[in-house]
Image (cartoon, rainbow, N blue to C red):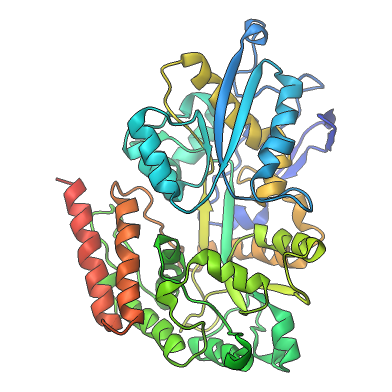
Length: 480
């Protein structure tokens, strides 16, 4: 379906509004459908774009407010910019051209200890007005009753489409209410430095089929080809220092054939499948055979990223923003070259198939006793994802309501990553479990068990059994 809109000039950007619902998302089980609300970012006949579905009244032009926005270290818009700085340097100035009386104070917060910082702020009544972060953490804050609902700022046609899709609702809502802005879809996989394999004469070991899948044996053979203990170079870096390590293992368990949760989230089911044990045994073997950095129990996801930038490992878990990280890093010296990046899938015993990690939602508004601040926080959050291109370009997020991602057109690797979304109808999709009340506790309970496995205090079978018991105890605690 093609939606033809007018074109216009907005905030220095030329917006050509001939929007085609991306085939990838249209075919996906996650696709919302053809929404016609203002979430599509449609033109407004030359008028000033409204920051919400309701538009701006004359009285609102006289309103004044000062908001605080906490931003994670996510996304870059231009070379030399540190992750997250685009909000203060680029996004907020565009907003203030339209709404000079609504000030936005931006604070970038590190990922280390992020959950503790925010939960402490909630408990003390010092939470910010806005938080730019993913539902992997923010849905838990909604479960605590700390987040404002966003139903009133989302146009009715868009809201209808979202509520029709239970898979999306799991990621953006609590109790049937939207609590995270849904105009953002991301897909992640593994990203590797093809240059290392070329230099080793082993490029032929990398995935060659259309969707770049590989079996565990093919994956292991590729790691062996570049691992060089004497030079401190390994095919991959495993990590289990904190909860940031769970994504790698969860995604692979699903790729091996496990299902993490039952449909109503009343049980963690990965331990019921031999596939989960097989996935953990596979990673355990990589450590035992010296194909990854030693002592994964002492390594974090941040360490793994640093190794990758330094050519000390071949691949890491990554999303679309990692492409810019390489491009910009090669220019400013933070990435060591040569570095030719390539996206690939998680290893899977089923040839030609893997698991798809696709996530929806970004950004929340905290409840505030000041109704004016809460109102403008919602308007800013909605505007940031629907009325300009800065958010999409900085975070490399897809708009599920139909904006073709123009930032992919010059990069075949980003085009490939977008193409992966077409497999959501055929491949298993990782269920993140964000809607579980005790989800943060579950994440924190997993990594000590992974550490025990890597220091040989537990077998893979014991590890998944221990994780299952902990997870299900947490679920039961919150379901009493």
